[in-house]
Image (cartoon, rainbow, N blue to C red; front, top):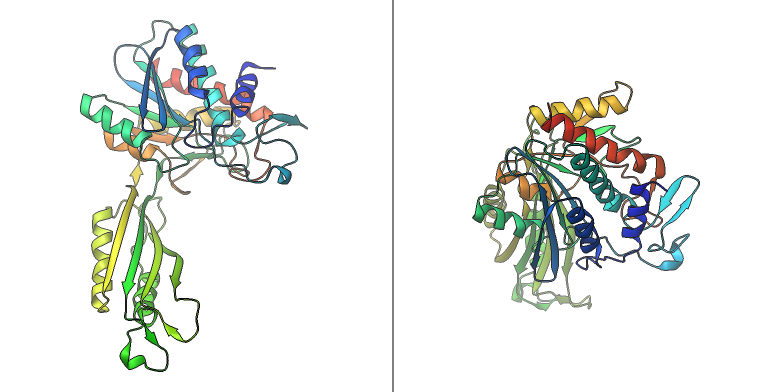
Amino acid sequence: MRDVLALACELIARPSITPDDAGCQQLIAQRLQAAGFAIEHLRFGEVDNLWATHGNDGPLLALLGHTDVVPPGPREAWASDPFAPEIRDGVLYGRGAADMKGSVAAFVIALEQFVAAHPNHPGTVALLLTSDEEGDAIDGVRKVADTFRERGQRIDWCVTGEPSSKDTLGDLLRVGRRGTLSATLTVRGVQGHVAYPDKARNPIHQAMPALAELAAKRWDEGYESFPPTSLQISNIHAGTGANNVIPGELQALFNLRYNPHWRAQQLEAECEAILRAHGLEYAIHWHRGGEPFHTPEGALRRAARDVLAGFAGGVLPEESTGGGTSDARFIAPLGAQCIEIGPVNASIHKVDEHVRVADLERLPDVYLALMERLLLR
C-alpha cells in the first residue's frame, strides 16, 4: 500500500466529526516534525488547528485543509462502516475519503517528499489544518487568520485541497469563491382571530410581498467568471398550528451567495431598504459567512494550470469560481492568492463517500509538482 493510501486510511479510521479532531492533527504533526517542520498547535475553544512550516524566508506557500468530517448518518445506509476504510474495485470508501482526508494525506506526503528532496529550498512551505471547516467555522481558520493578522504572518500562495474536480482529477481549477451572507428575519404582527382581521395584523400577509421582491430581485449580471448574485429563501415558519388564529410572528431564513461586486454590508443595506419600503415591523440577524475572493491571472494560476495540464496530457483545466465556500475565504484577505485543487467531488457528504485509489495516489505528485514549480523556478 502506497504511503498516501495508508495515511488516508489511518485518518479515515479516526471518527473526527466536527469539531472533534480525534487525534488526526497529532498524528500529522508527529510525522512532519520528524521531517524537520516547526509545529504550532493553535486550539481555540473546542477546535484544533495545526500550523506546520519548513523554511525561514519568503515567499510562503501554504497548503490548507481540514481534518473534521460531517456526520455519516445511519450506519445501515452504508455498504461498509464509514469509519472503517475499505477498498472495493479500486475505490476507497469511508467518511472523509474525498472531503478531505484524502487531500490532507496527499499534502503530508508531498511535503515530506519536497523537503527530503530539497532540504535547503528557497521560500517556506506550510500546512494549515483545522477541525472546524464543516461546523461553525468560527474557531478554525477564521480565528487562525485573525491571529496571523495580529502577528504579521504573511501568506503569498494558498492551495486548498477541497474536492474540486468534476469527472477526472484536475479537470477543474477553482480560482475564487462567492461570498455567503445569511439572515434570520422576524416579522412581527398582532395575533388574533381569523374572523376579526381588523383586530389583528397578519405578519404572513405583510411579509410575502417583501420576500417575493427579495427573491425576484436581479442583483447583478455576474462578475468575470462569477455567476450572478443569488438570494434563496430556505425556510419560512409562522402560525400556532390552529387554522383559526392569525399568528403574531413570522420567521424566514434566507441566504445570499454573492460575487465581488458586493460586500456583505452593502447587501444588508439593500435588503433592509426593501423590508422598510414594505412597512414591516421586523428584526433581522445577519451572519457574514465570508466575503468573496478571486485570484487573478498570475504566478499561482499559471503554475497550477501548467501542472494540471501536464497530468492530463496537455488538456487545460476549467477555471471556475462555482460551488459553495471554503476556508480559503479567510486566507485571501491576508493578501494571499488562493486556488483549490482536489479529487472528484461527486460523493462528498453522501452515503458511501469515496475516492478512486488511482486519483489518490496521483494527488501527492500534483501538489509536489506545484511546490517545485512555484518555489524552485
